[in-house]
Amino acid sequence: MEQPPSACLDPGCPSSFRDVVGHERWFEALISNLRNEHASGVHQPIALVGAAGVGKRTVARIYAKALVCERELDTRIDAAPCGTCDECLAFDRSSFAYVEVDARHFGDQEQDDKRVDERAQVNAVHSLIERDSGLNTAPVRVVVINNAEELVGAAADVALKTLELEISSSLYVFLVNDEMRFSAALRSRCSVFRIGPLSVEGMVGRLLSLCARWGLRSDEVAIRAIARAARGSFGEALSMLGRVAAHGDLTIESLVREPEFGWGPTMMACWRAVLRDRRDEALALFGQVGRDGPMRMKAMQSFLVACQLRRLLGSVPPDGSVSPALDLVSPVDWELILDDWTAWSRRTGLPVDEAMDRMVGLWACLMADMSWGACFVRGMSVLNAERKASSG
Image 1 (cartoon, rainbow, N blue to C red):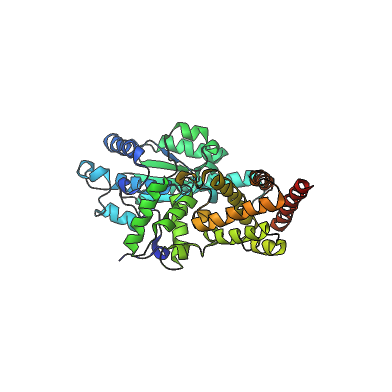
Image 2 (cartoon, rainbow, N blue to C red; image 1 turned 30 degrees about the vertical axis):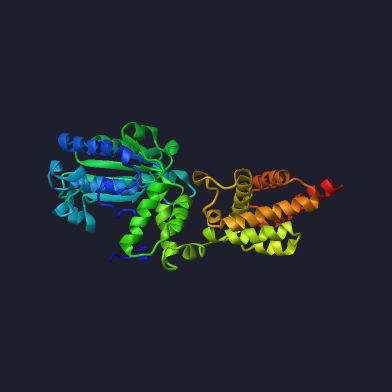
């Protein structure tokens, strides 16, 4: 049995392009690019563009290892690295053929003088270019620069000149989170691959496979909640998986012990108190939702939207999830809270749909950094004002 997530959750675990679930649509383009590099000996820089956690670093590592692998490319399945030659074994330990740096750490982040900071970044780029190249035994050196959008000014110019000088000896791979901030000059020299978020279904399959590999009992409902909460980022899903696995197996019971997943029942209890005019109880319960004020504010917005959807449609469509935490609330509890809304409407004379609309509008306008307690009191005041206006 392999180690559990707390010990080995690493997006770099896949050993071939086919192991990276969810990005099959551009595997052939990458493999074709790899074959061209092998044939020509010319290494066109690559930019992998996409949100953090979608798999850019994983793909970069597989590509680099496949490029330095000593085995003939045509004898490998899907051009994947063999994993057994000297260069592959060295790559897994510490290889002079592979250098990975973070552009955010090139300069002094606490330096107020931008000119000094830029000089530090330029010096760091120069050091990177010269580092270890004479000790490399592979035919090419791969340099991966993460957060490449942080390369600006003179540092980007130095990197650009280096690309032109080292095109036959080094491959530069830029991992870009924000394409709008990435140097246009560098981008124009690169083969650009834009990597979108993973689908929920693809992520669920991969996470279930990992749980089986690690010998963890898993509940597909819990895994699906993690996949939805990750919003297409496999790195974020792995991080959540590790936190939940610290409580035991991957079950709903373990999942709801995490603040971002366990607030659904508390929010239900809070609104039952609201709709029964138990204001102090409701405020205390709202203070137990999530880990902090911004999470409470977002949870309230999600809850009210989910109430509207369920009242209108009877349920939330599978592809229209408002919040994974609310997906874990039982249908019976949803029926009870909607019944409470109906009972409140009968007592106050205010239509449920109108009250929900006003609450959704109010909470949508409130900022996450505002006091959650003050926002809650304001929301209750608006609801009571509508009630009084209706009864008057």
